Amino acid sequence: MIDLHSHILYGLDDGSPDIETSIKMAKIAVEEGITEMVATPHFIPVDKEINKETIIERVNQLNEIFLQNEINLTLYPGEEVFLSLDIPRLLDEEKILTLFNQKKYILIELPMMSLPKYTSEILWAVKLRKITPIIAHPERNKEIAKNINKLVDFLKIGALVQVNSLSLLGVFGSEVKKTAERIIALNYAQFIGTDCHTPRARSPRIKKLEKAISPALLNTLTVDNPLKVKQNEEIKIEVKDLEQKKMGLLKRFSVFLNSLKEARVEE
Image (cartoon, rainbow, N blue to C red; front, top):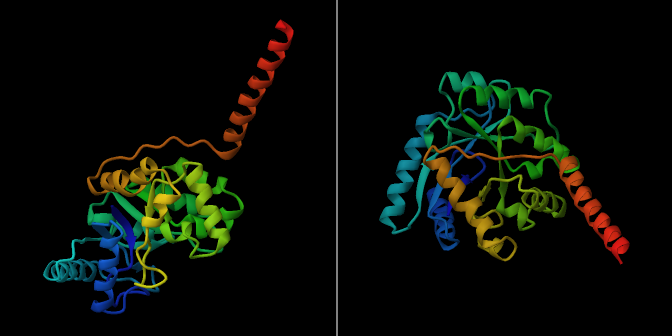
């Protein structure tokens, strides 16, 4: 599996504090079936702007350490960029890292409590630069939890969605778990990532999802689609909003009722 969202790089954000912790996290990831992982430390415009070269350097260092310790995990550079009006400028100035540092996909984090009015505007601006925004753990956003169609609006712009494995495992509470399950059930997610921060409660766990998600879908969300990101391939999706989905169900039910009526007439 390829994990597109992790905080395994030590000493850069609220993730791993030291090399020893990063090694522990890497060992857990391998046990869970993860062989490749994008290191995505938080980038918060103005408040916490990490130098790209620092991330790349630390990725290379940890890859060497993993090799020396016979840990079969390969890291790649990236960032989890907090939503702001500065993102288009930062991309133009090449100050933020895209996933795999390939200028094709970027991981964007939404605020937890709200959805700024400029959210769609920024997603459009990213798409206009021929970069696809991937929204990190939208199930943790309060407004999306209340109205899932707000997420559909972003998908229609061309954004993609990454759900946290730990959300599906209930680590962030029942409401987040419920929203994450709904996003998966409606086929609104293209990726599952761990968003791991520690080797404890927020470790890179994903294997338990095999009991809850079909093997084919889990493979798509953790292997096939992340591989397309790595290989700079386009991921095409077709999205219908929730009301259209409901209408589809009503239409099928109506057809079913009509068929019953016709059967009675024939009798």
